[in-house]
Amino acid sequence: MFPIAYHPIYKHPLPDGHRFPMLKYELLPQQLLYEGTVQPNDFFEPKICDLEYVLAVHTKEYVNQLINLSLEPRAIRKIGFPLSADLVERELRIAQGTLLGCQKSFDTKISFNIAGGTHHAYATHGEAFCLLNDQAIATQFLLNNKLAKKILIIDLDVHQGNGTAEIFKSNSNVFTFSTHGKSNYPFKKEKSDLDIEFLDNTNDDVFLKTISEIIPRLIEQQKPDFIFYLAGVDILASDKLGKLSCTIDGCKKRDEIVFELCHEYQIPVQVSMGGGYSPEIKTIIEAHTNTYRVAKSIF
Image (cartoon, one colour):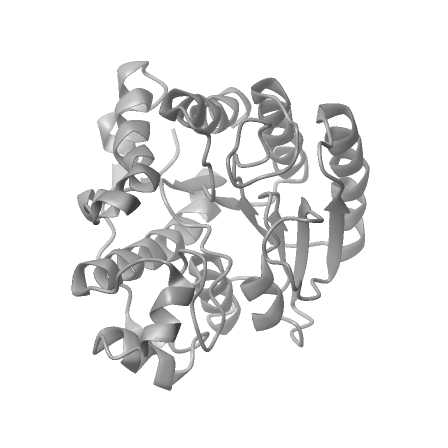
C-alpha cells in the first residue's frame, strides 16, 4: 500500500469553539481502517521536525516566537487558534510527516499525511489555522538535498495557497499552481505561478474540465520530478467556508485526474489533506476517504 503520516497529537483537543475542525483527524484513520482501505502498518508516526528544515523556509524570528510562545496577540488572532506548546508540537509533527512522506514516495510513488496542507503559513507568520507550511518545508528539503530538481505544487483547495505562493515566488525550481474561489479567503491574493479563480457556485463540470486541461499541460511544460498535492475537500457545495458547488463525486473525480496523471508520468506525489468544513462530519470524512480509495485503485 502507501505510507500515511498520523500521530495522536494531530487530534489534540482545543477549547470548545475549535474542536470540530480537529475531529476529522481522529475519524478519518478509523474509517480507513474499518473499511479495509488501509492496514494498520500503513501508518507511521512522525517525530518532531528538525528545526534546520523548518528554518530553511520560515524566518528564525518567527520560529523562535512559536517555540517560546511569545507571538504577539495580533499574530495569534491571525492564526485563529489559541497558541500552546501542544499546538506547536502538532505543527512540527505534521511538517515532519509530510517531509518523511515525500521521501517514502520515491519508493511507493504516493504518500499521505492525514493532516497538513497548511498553505496559509508564510515565511514570517501564520494565519487561518496554519502555523508552519508543511509542503513548503518538504519542498525545500527535497531541493536542498538534491532529491528533486523541479517541483510542481498542485493546490486544489477552495482557498488560495497564499503562503506557499509567497514563499516560492522567486524560486524557479518550484511551480505553484492554485485553483480557488475568487471571492473566498484570502481576500488579498498572492501571485502563484498559475492561479485559476472560480466564480461562486462553480460546479463539477467547469471545475473538472478546467483542471483536466491545465494539469497535463503543466506537467508537459514544467517536467516536474516531484509533485505535492493539496487535496482539500472544501470545494464541496456544503462547505461552510467555501463558495463553490462541487459534489462528493466531483471531488472524487478531481483526485482521479491528479493521481492518474502522476501514475501515467511516473512522478512521485505527496498528498496533504487540507481543508474541509461541511456542517456534517460524515460528509467531510466521506470526501477525504475517497481520496485514499482512489489512490488504492490507481497505485
